[in-house]
Length: 138
Image 1 (cartoon, rainbow, N blue to C red):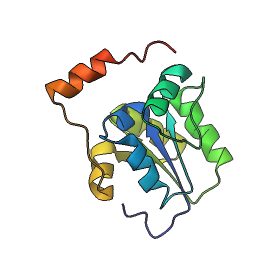
Image 2 (cartoon, rainbow, N blue to C red; image 1 turned 90 degrees about the vertical axis):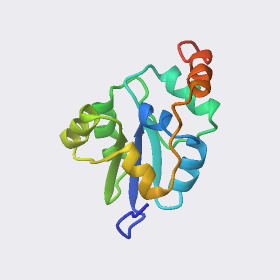
Image 3 (tube, rainbow, N blue to C red; image 1 turned 180 degrees about the vertical axis):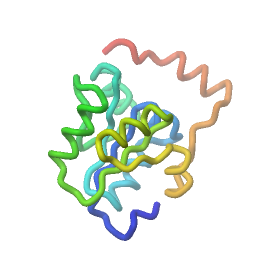
């Protein structure tokens, strides 16, 4: 991904954007090469984010915790003083949150294309496996 020549960046993924990627662990490992901090934010309860990141062996520098995405992005920007703050999301709502908090926004498909990340496929097998895994309990 072209980081504009600077690695002084904080990169936040909305949980749904991270789920859209085939290998979240590989994405985080790759992103660590050109960012200072990388993590996950979500409106979902903390245990849902924790279960997903643990299952996919994602080591995050920050997560939203019990806060909503907007408050999390504001707090992260204050805590992690980097030149750029980039939010990877999935829809117009995510884009509006990025704009409201002063973050740059990247649609997950565009981020994946720029960085060479593989998107998860919408195959019936992948959907069945996702339905079989329970993210609704700790």
